[in-house]
Amino acid sequence: MSEEVLQITDLYVSYGGIEAVRGINFNVRAGEIVTLIGANGAGKSSTLRAISGLVKPAGGNVTFEGEDITGKDPTMIVSKGLMMVPEGRRIFPNLTVLENLKIGAYLRNDDLEKDIETVYGYFPRLKERSWQEGGTLSGGEQQMLAVGRALMGKPKLLMMDEPSLGLAPIVVQGIFEIIRRIHEAGTTVLLIEQNANMALHVADRAYVIENGKIAIEGTGRELLENEKVRAAYLGSAGK
Image (tube, rainbow, N blue to C red; front, side, top):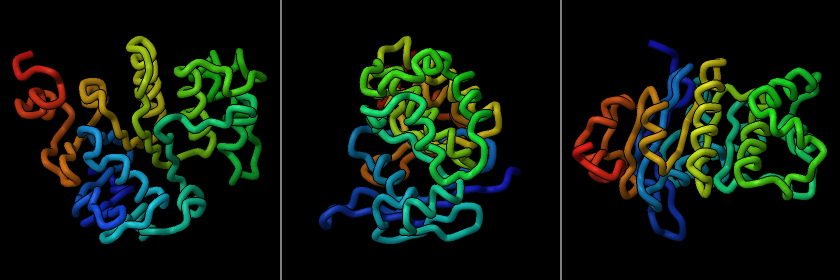
């Protein structure tokens, strides 16, 4: 069995007394794609925000590569190799594509050129637009840039929050193909996604979050064949 890189134990996240995440437990092993699926407000993004240090958990523990990082500073967490592609892209619109990519490597002090070319290999369109301001890119191109920026940090674990949100179906297919390629190149991925069908097809393992709790878990294939999952998240129990 592969080594666990991330362990979430009895995690609680609250906002103003309202519990968004209520005692969830899950893990991510080295070399996996693990996905969390669920409806809006189920607690998926709150879970990622707690892992990455953007919100302090109300209870529980986040362990990354054997180290307790619960509630630690986000910069420290990034320095450990845990990167996030945030929901809504969050690129810097007034900076060029190349400048956005270099910001993703702000904690590094080594040569960036090889990794910039690696990102351009995944996303040739970004290379064509390397001197174009990020805010002038299409939604799909901005998502490519957000992923590329995270890759520049050389992640040991890449967390992706709703990478398909607001994108046309053909663009979504391209983004998921890149997720497969990144994974095949050796990056461990934790994926938060409303497009359950696409997410479960790429996932090694998956968890369904409902009302802040883990409701169902299994392999991606098992959840694709689960009648409750198919009825609630895949549009039909009979397909």
